[in-house]
Amino acid sequence: MARAMWTGVLSFGLVTLPVGLFTATDDHTVHFHQLQRGTGDRVRNKRVNERTGREVKSEDIVKGYDMGDGQYVVVEPDELDDISPGRSKVVDIGGFVDLADIEPVHFARTYYLGPRGKEYFKVYELLRSALHRSQKAGIATLTMRGKEYLTAVRAQESVLVLHTMHYADEIRDPRQEFDLPRREKISPGELGTAEKLIEALSVEWKPEDYHDTYEDRVRELVASKLEGREVVAEAGPPEATNVVDLMEALNRSVERARSGEGRGGARTAAAKGRRAKATGAQDTKGAKAGKGAQRAKSSGGSRRKGAGRKQDLAALSKKDLYARATDLGIPGRSSMNRDELLQALTGTGSAAA
Image (cartoon, rainbow, N blue to C red; front, top):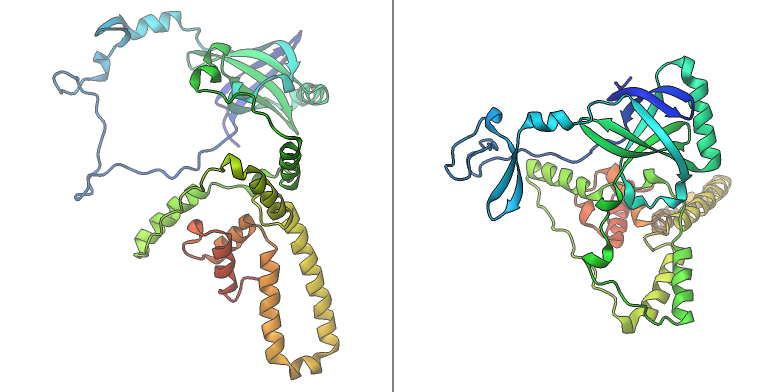
């Protein structure tokens, strides 16, 4: 069992619930050390005096608030400790808001809240069920590691989740960051076609279907360098859609999505794959009944089997093809497009397995 990173009580009204805070996410990033080229020696970062270049001990370092023109307000570590809120033991919910009213940009990090003992299961489940049915989130503050956090507590299936949040003054106004597009005149045909494209590309949200392909490429790069294989560069991004060609691009995208070739065609492709698999099972039964005739045409049957395998694979999305290529250990798969993945799989001789 994991160890709680914070323990205290969750309070709402006159009800208090002892809880522990647990990390909800992991980092799967491939980490590298810094080395000096040519020697392989590790490179270390040191704190040095910018003027003298000499290393500075940690106990001699203070904080400075930049006033501009090289002027600083010096703040000692113990001065910050004196005004620190300290370690709070209470997550006090001051009110409940509609979860849908919170823009996702406010959410920072996610944690799980767990009850600290079986005797608190009923109170825990009561709050979780009430939040789930009402679709509300409890807004509270939490002091941890010398910092005060704004938080939202909500229900997620069988667990309570706590999100640390950005304060309102931490959210940037997009109008001050870049020029927003003006209200362009859009024809009903363009709008309708765009809505059809969205519908055609709509899939059921399954987070396990998505993975970090960049991290796959990093690991493949390391493996390729170990084995002395050639490293293939990733293809560049597609060109931007010209406004003149917008309607044509929308129509072609709709047709592509409906055929299962689009990026979001996983649901359609899976259905096609199931139909193809069922058809293949019926063909197998027929083949058993006419085994003698099949032996007489074994060569042609083999060709048809290979064609059928390719046809089954052709119904799959790029994501599904990539998953099969990963299972088969096909090199260079991370830089392949859908057609290249299909060709590589059909050439393995075991793609249908």
